[in-house]
Image (tube, rainbow, N blue to C red):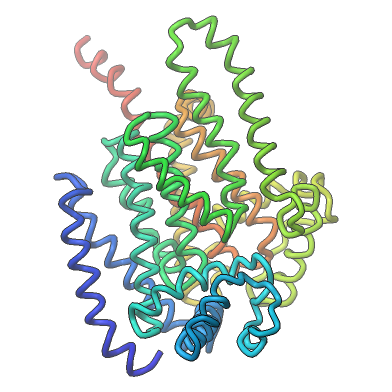
Length: 444
């Protein structure tokens, strides 16, 4: 960051807020209007804070590596527009005439997920004279659009919890910090919001089908290009959710009982087909190699990165069986750790506080409702089944591959809004189920 950031950031902030205030009339109501600007402001604060912390605390990192690559594209267009366009469209392919640029890019390789993020940012760089902070604010704005779509979708399902859902989606410190700056995580959590919005409106509510379908496809494309494992975690529970919702509309109880296992098998088959075909040939995410990749990634991240914050959940030998064996520990570490005494720096402390809140809400909810009643409620409500299954699958994935809390706090942010939203909805459902009994006792 330099003097250009200080001069241009206030101007572009004013522009973004002007757009936001104009859009607020269309995308809010009397209940949600008060959250729109504060939630966006937190995204902007997170984007700027992430850049400051990476520059002055970490002394560099991924966010500035992205900007380094963006600058190479920016300079290439300035020197020779035709060559710059060829560089932009090459997508990591080895082309000799581009060597003077590509030799400076350590992420230059075919279908690089990091390069995808850079290519998304390049057009934004031309709108702001390649100013790092403004590009980061643009990512925050794009990400906010996606998570607002997530919030709207949850409200369509359970509008009574609009306050609590706002907390779960917008006001978790790790989510608005790690999911707001010039990072892959910002695009992905926004894309997850659009995917969630598209799935619900097209396949369940069957409203705003064209708009929701377009947004859903954009979200899926971004996830496939940037972090496909998020989509692979989302697909099976989402399809199960769709079949649950549609089977509940069948009036005949006996027909529902008969069709439900069939629909579940079909959903599992579609999810498996999608997972294996989307990842086939990609050694990073191929289903046949997922155990091996998890082992390698865990060893690398636990031994080489953030050695002071490493955790151990058990041995991974490269097999799916070993992942299943450590799955309970992976879920626990993803949702409820680091503990407060494990925090090694201010950033990790935020994650530790959130994990403590998650643990408190989870234990208190099941204590108040009872474990068996809570599980029955989860099974009975399709949205709860979806949220918890998605959170568990995602938690297993990130818990087994992270190896240290510094990486885990970034990887787990997609599951956090869904898990906490599900807890809040469960609490409302449990309270609603208890009210009639209370009224009956009073009237008696």
